[in-house]
Image (cartoon, rainbow, N blue to C red; front, side, top):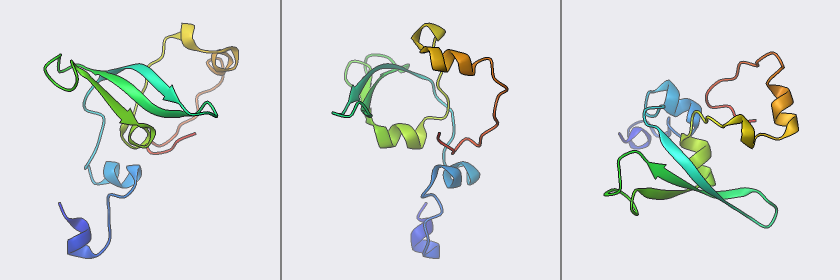
Length: 104
């Protein structure tokens, strides 16, 4: 929908707005199988194995940018064996409630 053309303002410019107006949401699961880093060790792209099978994407794989990842990924499940000591220590803390569009 062209909200910006109709009302002169983009209502879907943030993750929060897309969730509020149900223009986006967690509706599909994929497996993250790789990550590319810049010179400073920050992620720049993610390799994704899609559950649609090998006929979609490049033999079933896609690559998304870090911006796409932040904008459209809502949940991530990580095996404990991949966590460092500080991350494991956080598991013993009281959980903090955050909104789905918040990033920390």
